[in-house]
Amino acid sequence: CSAEALNDILGKFYAGLRTKKGEKYQRSSYLCARSAFQRYLTALKRPFNLRTDAVFQYSNKLLDAVLKQNKSTGSCKAVRHKDAITDWGVRGLPACCCIFPGCLMLFWVF
Image (cartoon, rainbow, N blue to C red; front, side):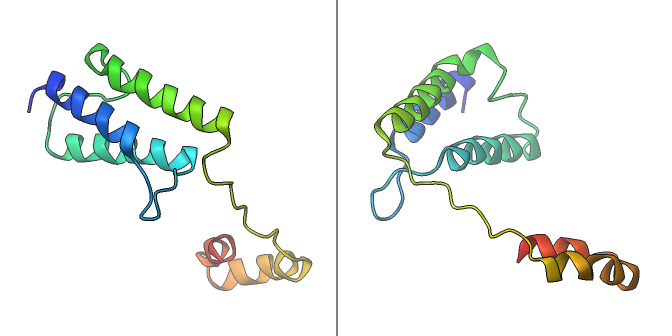
């Protein structure tokens, strides 16, 4: 697939990207999709950079327009933040990290 053909395909993909329920994704999901494609192309050793190559200007502008429209219409899903870590969790961090260094990550995941 040439860079020009991929640019057209990506533009259509970004414009039509929806959840199974037909809702629009959060902004970060669109950007993560582009990053995932970039990682895949890098693994295939393709010399494309989806964010910076001039060939992909159309799909990037379309992605920007989709994100801008989603923001202005409020049609994208609301951001869901994780709960703040509790005082109990903060007190437990130093002791936990001394016993098991990877424990800090467990607190942030849950």
